[in-house]
Image 1 (tube, one colour):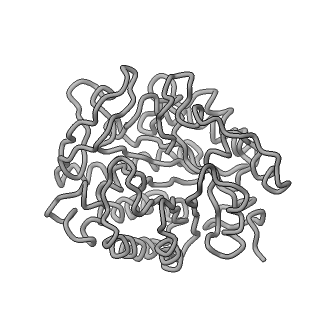
Image 2 (tube, rainbow, N blue to C red):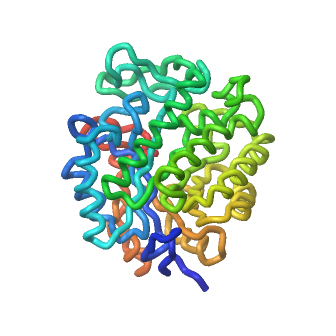
Length: 355
């Protein structure tokens, strides 16, 4: 029987176990949206994960969604991440950079003067974003033109190349939690009538074309994608009766690209769809399961019963940097500090989602 403590070959990248560290926003970037010495320490401490997936890293200036998040679009940023990847590799770990374009999520206060958030359609998200000046309402984004969509895909490609140059083992495209790729997938935020919207086949186009372009640049074996079907976070609206058609079409297209992995964040009662997607995808399947509170040791059974190839842990990794050893020993576990999990009390983001 395969267990979560067994090694696995991730499309040529050997992983020491099947326990992944899920991406979690930290909002601790330094000047110029760079990784810091704290970033180096944070990830190196958790290098016993089979795979670390970083916090969301913006592929461009306009891709930023929250204060103090890091980027991979400048030489300074690339150099800062080299220290992180070197430390993780020295400790025996493997690390993928999650590339996250926030789209309509964020606020113009985060950008140079004159820039405004962009999205598939000019539809504002409900709610507020936390900024250095306190909470601010989401703004109505500017609808991307066709040429700008292609340029945005190019931004992902450049960031992916920068990630490899910085020493990452690969990249994960963030297509979940209401950010740009997810905004294209969801009919509530994508009201386009051109080739990028309308039908499920058109709404999945941005995700597929981004994955295809990044794969062509750095190799499919170093490219993964994260999804969260039906997740209403960031006021994304995906009617339940259309989920299966959209996501099965998407995964069929992704399978043809031979990506390193598909990473699904399960939100709500979608296990049947998750099982369908797992069966349709021809690569490694990572599951961040829906749980009450932080994912616990019972999730290890998902590898044993074949539901997933790798199981991803979030909050419990923050409180337990040596989590794989603690899971194997069946504890003890430090209890995650909710305030720290949600962004870090040292900057006051006590309700800031770590997603």
